[in-house]
Image 1 (cartoon, rainbow, N blue to C red):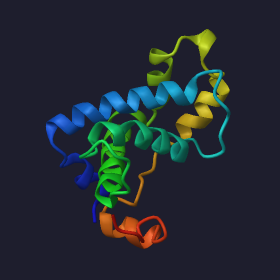
Image 2: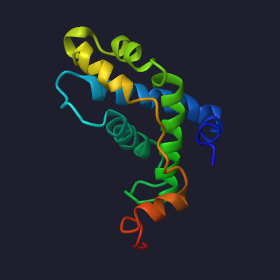
Image 3: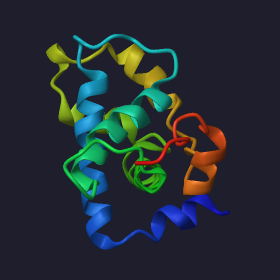
Length: 139
């Protein structure tokens, strides 16, 4: 599967939402009061998912819908391609968080260098195969 084509194929409404959620996730990731992480891309995708899922779940109960996890990763890939990859992450972070409240420029550069990749778990089937214990029960 072409992950970039998949990411670009989401609806215009989901694209707009993905960009807004991505910016909120970047703010959480680069604030000075957040912990430094070894894998900023993975951490950012996790923050994105935490923000995306409550906005897009189908009911008021927490559920482990593999479709929602996959949708979150596809939306993250879209937003990261548009806003974070290819040297766009650092300028975005600097625009969103003022210098006194964000990580050092050195840390931002390290974070930015990790954004040129994609999340690969982008189908419900992939999620079920990668995380079988997470989806092994039924309601």
